[in-house]
Image 1 (cartoon, rainbow, N blue to C red):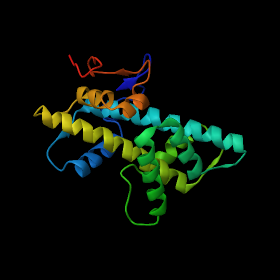
Image 2 (image 1 turned 90 degrees about the vertical axis):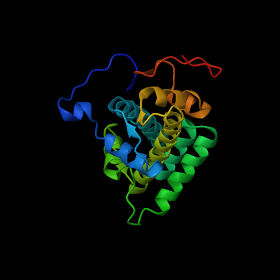
Image 3 (image 1 turned 135 degrees about the vertical axis):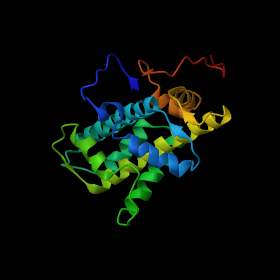
Image 4 (image 1 turned 60 degrees about the horizontal axis):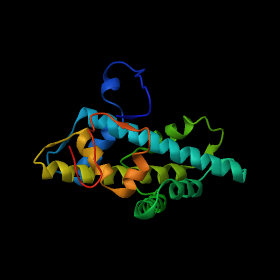
Length: 206
């Protein structure tokens, strides 16, 4: 998992070892690579931490935008502005495009990989008193799905190059570090990738 400081589990039993988000990752993994590449349980925790931390950053930024505009409904437009502030370069451009497309196709029967109910609960957990528009949930879901797909695709490539069938936290860590935009977004000062191993800039790894 990725953590800042000391983190303690408060849940016990199955869900402490297998977070709910693990089902999202497996679904995306099948979409990206139908081969028998699997995701290690520890890797699932790493991706869960990344997902929760980033969604929290986006949501808090969007809430600040709505507060400044004195609006009472969290809209897709505020999520879009928050995405542009939290991401940069091509990553931001593609994330925005994914969000816009998801909102325009919201009435179709296609279900997103990251459920709308999950995104809504993440927003509600920020203790917001604002109403939450459905389009905002669709937008954020698509952005999170795009970012996870990018990380998983790079991790799959690394695992394949090493002739491995299991995506470990090490592959996720290197995939993020070697991508300038992903590195700026997820590998912030104080972030610890459990079992990620060391990284030396300049394409030297140990």
